[in-house]
Length: 63
Ligand SMILES: [Zn+2]
Ligand SMILES: [Zn+2]
Image 1: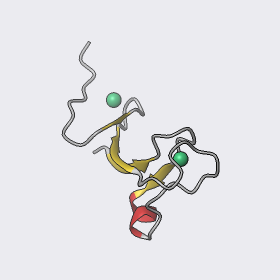
Image 2: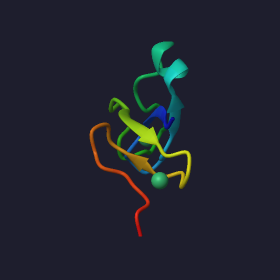
Image 3: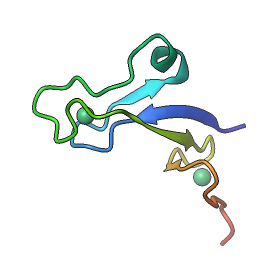
C-alpha cells in the first residue's frame, strides 16, 4: 500500500505526513520557498521506488 503524503512543489520540496496535515500543517512555511504560503499537494509515495504520483495517476514498474 502506497502512503499518502503532502508535498510542497516549490523549491523547499517539503514532505508532510497525513497526520501532520490533519494537525493543521497545510501550507508551506519555508521562508524563501517559491511556494511559500501555498497549500501542499496531496500525492502518493510509491513504497517501491520512492517517487511521488498523483491520486488517480497511473504508476507502475513495467519495463
Ligand atoms: Zn515550500
Ligand atoms: Zn514506483
